[in-house]
Image (cartoon, rainbow, N blue to C red):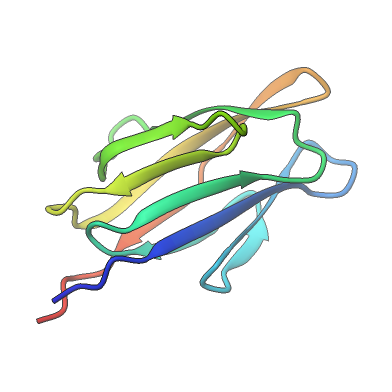
Length: 118
């Protein structure tokens, strides 16, 4: 049986550039992209960090499956959340649309759905 967990992705500005520095609660980190491992029914949250005005949208990239049963949606605090659907599998590329100094940009990290445990 799969245990439901919360996976957190921290979205920060990479220095004075317009690139993102991403890190997650699993220890993955990198500039512009990371691959975050999730399981079915996991809750995922994106935390807006240093140098980012706001995240304006999080969507499955064209040609990728949408692995979320709910969300991702923006919360009142400006952070985002979603729940991985029970039948998700494989990998998904998704786009984070964000603003720095009022300019809108996009970054394309990935999710990898872990197979269910028996």
